[in-house]
Length: 274
Image 1 (cartoon, rainbow, N blue to C red):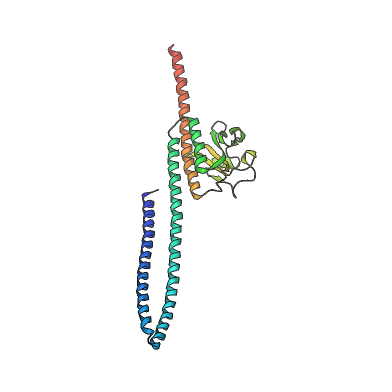
Image 2 (image 1 turned 180 degrees about the horizontal axis):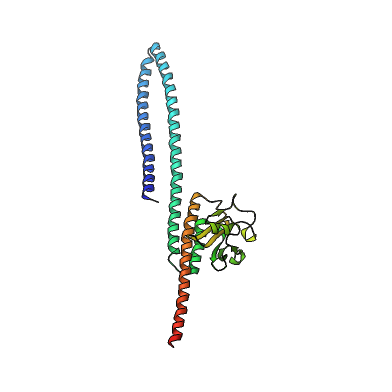
């Protein structure tokens, strides 16, 4: 969360508490005023008991005062309800901010893990853990784009074997078009009637691209039971995850290729020097 957001949240907290303190002071002041008024009326009641005219005048004053107090009481109750509603809204917003902070912290840790290794298998393992823990996916697959065949190959999965997921040509179907255009595809109305492994559409397809180069995709077939949909924060996570995961896959593939080439060259040099 930015410093400005934290500052705004702190100011909101102070404003809520300040209004509560002001309201409490007003209640105490009103209570003291009423106590003084009761003492005054008790004195006048005692004096009016000796004079019928004064008693009638006092009765009228009391009726009028009771009416005023009922009106003030109603106003205070309405203000109290308003303060309670503001406190409830603040508490809900506070929980939302806490959840956002927690997700951002998890994303930071996840992105660090993604870029801390150049081993392709380790990169895929981290991506799987991120999709489970941050997005809440139950059944999903990570695809990698094959530059030679222009096909998306399933390489890692959760809930099913990678081989259970179909190979997808670039530009074909929901997944292929999503990777080709770079736009995240979400199913309308929640989970599709037919699972993706059986030829249906995925719940969501997150394309993995580095600039204009397709790297693969994260295809989610179903979500965990406690997850009933995607929030705006989830869509932000899709965008951030797509960028970090694609970069990590790209870097690990380049490293693997350079290692193979280096080993080949080293083997050729060894043959020449024997």
